[in-house]
Every structure is written in structure tokens, then in C-alpha cells.
Image (cartoon, rainbow, N blue to C red; front, side, top):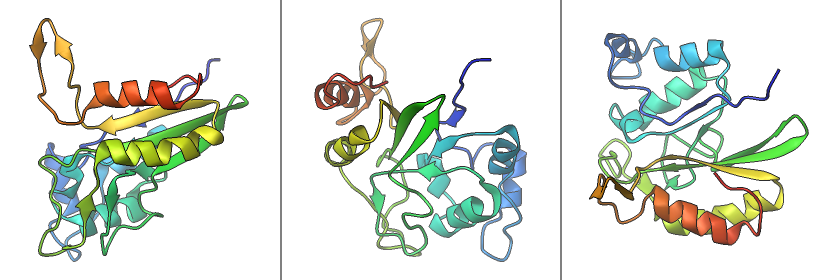
Length: 186
């Protein structure tokens, strides 16, 4: 009886034997088994992980078009000849039990296949600059803002920095807290 959002934090196209169904070209694409399962299970949204682009942006586009019945987000990816704002919107706003929930997706630029020969225009903007641009627009129309990131936690855990990142989840949380003017940001 409670409201639940079912989200994926990315890297849904690499790592299982079923990934071979995705294929390695347009001609060999069959389905994206993870997106098919997520669609059947009722996933509300996913963020593009860096490994979603391992097989190229066209394979991701086919996966979204053919297998995903949910939005696949990334606010900082741009310039792809295959992916556009309909394929991967920056953010979505939905209503959950009368509460307007905004979700902003961010994808790491590290180990992400950008500016490839098959898609030379695909680039990744600064994550912090993207958040500073997108968050005010989403906040205006949301009661709660969720940051769905595939970037990495750059804070300390037990005195050890697990991911030494220039821009990471700790930075995003601090920026979001300042920018949301009292609205909850998670």
C-alpha cells in the first residue's frame, strides 16, 4: 500500500550471457533482455550507465526503442547522431500519490565511449554544470527531486576515498541542497 519508485542506476547492457541478444550491429540486434525484464517488472526510469555505450549509441537506441517501456535518462550526454532527447531525456517529472517527483539522470564521462568513429558527436558535458543548468528547471515543477546518477560516490568510507573523482555524488548532493531552496533532494 505504499508508493514505490522502481529505478535502475545503469550498466544494464553488459555483464550476462543474455547480452548477446543485444547483438553487435543493427543487423544482429534482437532485444535488450535487461530492458525487457525491467519493462515487465514495471521499472519507472533508468539512467544511462557508461557500459550502455560499450556496443555503441545505435545499439543503445535500438534497446530503448525496442525494449524499454520506461524513460532512460541522461542530462549530460549530447550530440549523438543516434540518441536524442526522446531517447534519453535530461529529466522526467511524474506524480506519485499527488507528489510531483522530478528525476534527473547523470552519466559518468569516465570510461564512457564518447566521440567514437561511429558517433563522433556524442559528448559528455560537465556533470556539475549540467546539474546547475537542469536542476532549477526540474525544481520549479517538482515537490521532490531525485538525482539518479551513474557517476560514483566520491566521499570517504571508513577513512578511504573509494572513487577519487573530479565530480561525484557528494558534490551533486551539496549542490542540490543549495539549489533546491528547501525542497528535499535525495
